[in-house]
Image (cartoon, rainbow, N blue to C red):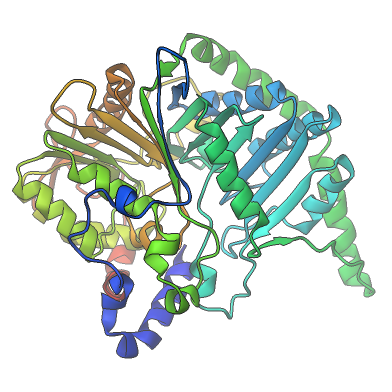
Length: 513
């Protein structure tokens, strides 16, 4: 994360003089063009389904997956139901226990004759599922590709990442949301875990989601991997053989994995069996486009050709007349989102924000900017809640040691409250409120309007987590759920020294981008 920040800042600094600071980001956009952008400039990865109760056409149903163990079991069940095709796309895909479980399920599906395709972002800072693993899956007919393998000296292009998270089965059911494939997204880490949220959906919208996968998978920026070459030197050969051995072990069942699977299913199965499937009268899917890079900023109208989700979200936000609830692990405003926030506050829209404190964040430089601005938002009327960094007793974990780990929030969710029957709406996706999601990362999201029960479940989940955290009540002041004064930086004894040192680079990053 820090490496990406520094690389981005260095690139922006080198360009700032000739590009007039941060203005170049929006050179082709009207700052007031928030309304009906998806209608005036139709997006290639944007679909709106309206359910027809007479014919049953465009029917979509959704399930909220708040808990990590339940979200993992739901993915396992989906893969086991697959009969024809499975598409897998993640920003992070780690060969840990969660990765092992899912990959073995994919191998079993491939053995049944299911076509399996995997697309993984090749960011230098998080990339682990390398060519050795791709080669290990090749005998099963599973094809792995990597998004944006630009070398590190392509100092700007490497920042254009594929941040999407997607699992699609048989063009009929899918999951998207905040979770990557790594233990900390599924409540399995004894060190650090995320409170996150996914949306499971089945119905007609899934074909549009799979089509967007095809566009990313087939794009020239997604490379077919090269099989690792057998080295000639003895030391390198030993490393090669060790890695091959590790991959073989990864693909073989073991007792610890079997025990973990049993614990996950014992906890998750009753929850899944009781979870409602909500009918969605109006479901929208939007994704950014693949292929954005440093050069497309110059040769293309970048915002119109690549950046669609941000516009869809702004469209939705600008129609809110009652309330807006934002859950985002990061909040790093740019001029446009800052302007939008102040427009809503000036209209006296009831705004609630739930994000990370310094204690819970995995990105200190974002916290440095948050604490610079958040007191002004609170003073203008926004309710601001911070996750304190501790486990919330929402559900059982597979071991007590996981409960004592540090916990952050990672859900990317928004609730739009509007006047009129059937107008409330939710968004669950991969989009953070920060410059990376606004300008660099390819993101995706699902929106559902018109089912108040679904809206209520998500709203209550966000507010329950928020109320169990700390609420900012003034400059450097926060209280817990009992109204007692607490450290505004979170639980424990958070070290603010590093954050203070990060203020200048984080400000520079925010200003230039």
